[in-house]
Structure formats: structure tokens, C-alpha cells
Length: 184
Image 1 (cartoon, rainbow, N blue to C red):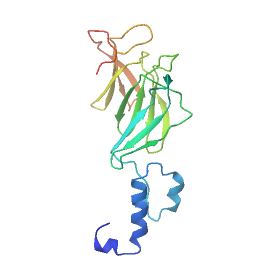
Image 2 (cartoon, rainbow, N blue to C red):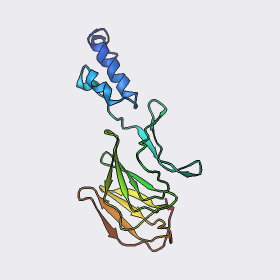
Image 3 (cartoon, rainbow, N blue to C red):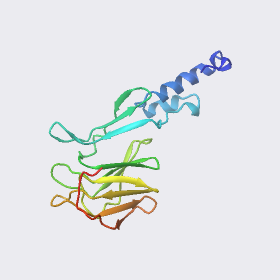
Image 4 (cartoon, rainbow, N blue to C red):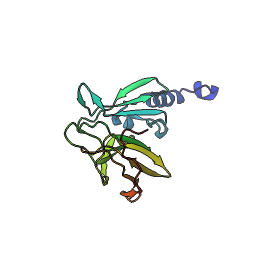
């Protein structure tokens, strides 16, 4: 964009404009793709994106999803209205996917896990946990997702389990010494 050869070349200007538009516009639809002059100008999801998925809003769980682009200082609503509301869940990012783990919808406590592909903007159900958990603590370590403690609708939990994406399986690990939920 600043190199003399590029900025003074009339053939490069449309490519630069398309690329910059795609880079800074998360709401770019797939309709843009066929009009791209160059495959280099296709939109990509930047690494500096934050996700706010579900939660509690207006007195009940919500299915709202917003992304924040730190470079543009802009929030974009990317809610998938087909998804059911979910609050008090855990979230993790692993190998390009966002995982939503457990949670509560004001009626049911979930052991379900959903995986979001931010590039394709699609959800996929993956293997459920062994226990229902809301207020669950979630962490990623060595390519595993860990779910620890939580509340199953009756009691605080001391159980913990880990998810291996390659096998799509949850495995129980040693329980914690104390029952707990909401741990950081």
C-alpha cells in the first residue's frame, strides 16, 4: 500500500482496496467472494478477534454472539438465530475453533458441547461431557480442553474431565478435593 510500485500501479489499486475492505469488515458476506479480483483479496478472520457468546441478557439467557475486532475497535453482531440460548457456560479456543461447554437455558443444565468455526460461521455438536455443568471452569492445555467442577442443577461438582478433539471424546480425570463452581 505504501510501496511506490504498488501505490502508483492502477492494476494494484482495486486489489488493495478489496483486501483492505475484507480485512476490516467482519460482516463481509460470501457474496463478495466471486467478485474478488485475486484470491489474496478474500476475507480472512483476523487473529485479533474476541467473541462474546451467549450469556444472560434482559432477565434470561441469550443466543447473541458478538465479535470485537481490536484493530477496528468495532463490535459486530454475528448471532446465529437458529442456536438456542445458553448462559453460565464455559468457552475455549483450540485449533481454530471456539468451543461452548455446558451451560444453562433457564430450564435445563447442559452436558452438551458445541464447536463454532469462525471462518465458515457454522456450529457443530461434538461429544457431550459425562456430567451436566453450568458455572463450569474451562481451560486449554496441551491440545486438550479441561472442564472442572460446576453445578449440575442439584449440587456443586468436584469432578473434572478433558476433551480430545482428535477422537471427539471426553475422559474423566481425577476429581478435585473440593466441590466448586465459578472457579477461575
